[in-house]
Image (cartoon, rainbow over all chains, first blue to last red; front, side):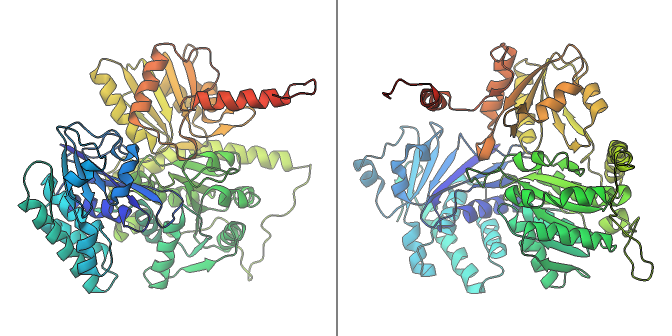
Length: 197
Length: 405
């Protein structure tokens, strides 16, 4: 079993942290995992990419993920860059942070492959409500964990608590709730492409 | 115990468990997380007794380590890229004076143009500085090599550089077993300096040596480096016994038995190569990989033996000698047995990813003879782009009769 998740976002959105959290949660689950950031010159707002590999076998490669099973898009404006979906499997999954519906995205020119599964989730809106800031990463980690079914909510929660251990405990609490809310939204949805809100 | 953590963090914790008395470093990407973590450990009292020196530069960092080591302290520093070059003046002093210390190089390209990403230009540029140079193929090996490096440095009374790929390893979060304190204490004896500055027993370390003895001193240094080859192997063996993990040593062969083609490389690309070798073997291509863990001293005999009977060898160079050619490739060519054809390839400069697809294509291209006749192939260069620029440069350089296009 191999699951390759590629996360695209912008500097300041916690792209690297999202990959790290997912890898920590998978490790807790007894799987092998690797989070690999691809850094640019770090600037807030610049496109950032991170890879997370999850496998039932030890992971030896350290190259960036070129054929992802799942692409997470933390900022939907990045979908204008064809490289964001580059190498995605025909039956791959795309998780987009947006308050727009999938139909709306398609109407604005986003091309959805016939066998692909797309999930839109208003992660920034959820974060604004729970964290007071539009930081979508923990919601998206919760969503990906639920969609792939490889990582349970306890592992996600535990990873968030460990990663944010040096901050005010309220930060971890709010992020755990955020990941949980995203999980519930995704779980309540259909199996095909969908918009959850 | 395996934990999911960042490579830099794992290396910092490992270095701390080796109990250095002095850590002197200047932050530079992508080394920064290592020295930040060490500074936190010292500040929190979790690494004691240890003095963390805030220095004004890399030159200051290495100079402080030289002073500390000469005074009998276990010393550690870390750097990258131009930071290593800023140490260049002091590097041969540490080795020439026979002062043991350990330095992590989080490998990064050299500017200009400025580039923060990974290749091996920094460490390779200092290959002749008299340090032992070890390359980690994974974060686990990076951790293990640091423990071995302190043992090696102090046994040989020589400085040791541990290279790990910047960002690719330093910033990767993965499962790593950081040896626990009791294990490291049992493996690594307390530092007993071979020579030591002591006000109560004054000696001079680093006196001037004139033409009457300089050649002999250099000859003995060279011999000492070559003798270190046996010690590198011994230290890896005792490490394997103590920690139950096979790490370090001179070379890391992977499925080279009966191989028709072997790819020689250093650093994290070896992980991807292992995957590519497995894939190729499944499709009937007898490929293998040979990791060079110990780059200096160069393991002549071990490389020759490892390549004996291998018809084709591909060397992946992650640094170039401008105006000359390859660096690692030249060493491999000199060690390759007669009858072995060496293809010298440059890949992954300045952070360009070395992918499994690319490595697989490379092996198949070499086997199909598509690289034959090329002394050095820039395998991942954008040929169209450089052709346009080259044409323009040559046009500029050509004598013109006034009018320019």
